[in-house]
Length: 417
Ligand code: ATP
Ligand code: MG
Image (cartoon, rainbow, N blue to C red; front, side, top):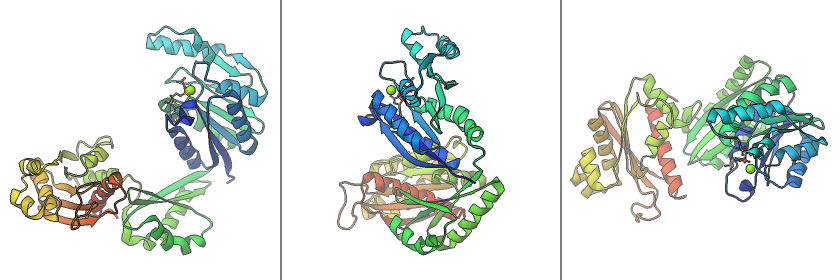
């Protein structure tokens, strides 16, 4: 299977001014890599015509595919069409069919069409128009030198739609099937990226056939294995074989053997077991509930999420005994266990998770420093509780690490690893 190369171009002054994060490129890079393209680089460039044309030319000179986003709007500062025409050495033409499409888009919205939108019907002479069903700006594709150049809108929602509807189907046509790619994930809690890397280094050094990536986020390590073959079944088998070698090397750290995010996996596991969940959160302030409800269709599993910050609320809403709070403090395994039990009893859930901790920056003590977090899990009418000293890498890290801990514990308890 030959590997094609690609370059991504993000165009817009808002990007180089730091007013807008370039999420389009991440999406494109992910999708193109999954399709077997080697993404060699990402260029972010402002709206200046010369800069855009130069960036297009440079990218097209060294890769098979260049995908640009942004600069297709109706205003004077949207110049991707002009820059592409210049880089290709062709003129712009007025595309009547494109103009009809733009007019009917405005008609659907029931809005008058400003004259400036005519600009969006301009295309480089040799270009093919790519219809945009969710916006006014059509994209386009044309050859520049030996490369295929594709321009897509900058609005993320429009880009995502056109990526699936217009770009991906053309890739097979232009470049032939890239073969099938199989991706597998293992999620680890416990080691640092460096520790896991050291453990795997000798094994990785002997492998030339596999792409294995490690990423870390909120203390959760994700190992990604990619294997490519002509057919999907062969790619899948190759990826499985690599994971089978990898698994025993990191076994004690695995919290999820499969695709993340952890909350989605936990949700699926609870649903498969017919279990309903309650969440009792203090220092995570609803983050667990947020992560679970980010997954569409969580309502058959999640019964209730309680955010109880104050001691009074822990007593009133979760039935935590005030004497327990006095004796052990709000951040204690005793209170975490009681919060989990209270969450389950109040809601009628089968399983409950509780988290109470010191996320900082203030509130720590010598005995309970910032990063001390206690967890409770109620299951089969009993509570388990444990404590973690999370590295103080900031409030956000501590809270995200705490959420990973909850989902990881739940997945382990439900026997998913
Ligand atoms: P439109 O016809 O809607 O104007 P366009 O192709 O001209 O489309 P831009 O004007 O460049 O798109 O960008 C529109 C908006 O999309 C920007 O204001 C920004 O919010 C968002 N956007 C643009 N480029 C990116 C990017 N690379 N990553 C994330 N968001 C982006
Ligand atoms: Mg713009």
